[in-house]
Image (cartoon, rainbow, N blue to C red):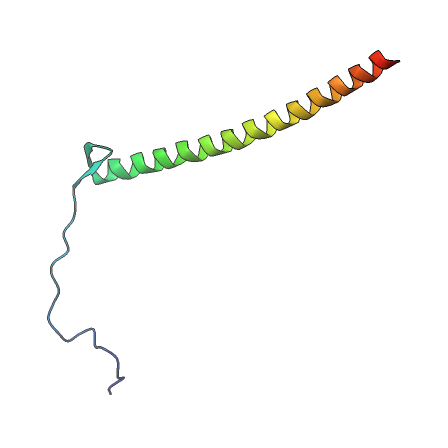
Length: 80
């Protein structure tokens, strides 16, 4: 019963899988599990930084708008 596709049971076996115990992450030699945790921590810090930058830009824009309204209102009051 040939299906026309490659057979998974025949052929030469591939090279054995190598388990990496230590990796270099940010210049440090760490155990692979510790490197994974460090990677998640770096990702979380980047995510928090991006959200903080967006919120800071939003607050700055709102403050500028409020300041413009205050100055415009003050100028109108002085003209009266």
